[in-house]
Amino acid sequence: MTVKEYTKEFFKMSIRDGQTQGDVERVARYINGPKYEIQYEFILLNLKTVKDAYQEASRVEEKLLRKPNQKRRGINTARGRGFPNIGGRTPKNEA
Image: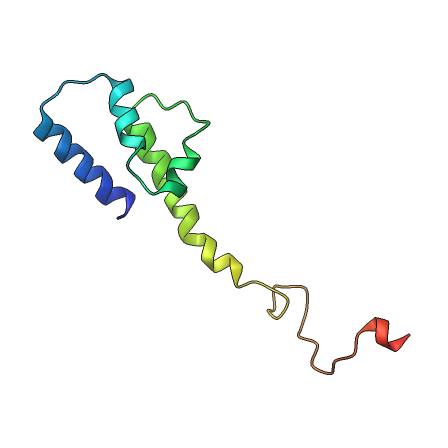
């Protein structure tokens, strides 16, 4: 479930509950719902509103979505350290 979908469900459930909670309680409930990777990023933050938590969760989700693409950059890619060693010779073998 994406952060946007979670937030939509969170507000639906909040309306159904009909409870009037303060911002602190509402934020505490909100930050316990997303994926663990997103919850982990909330640890050191002092979030005052659900809007702040939503914005932070969206930022973290975006970062997590980009992360797998960065793993492909390695030795055998043009942006890595160089071209693959096809001949099997390294500078140590040449000495």
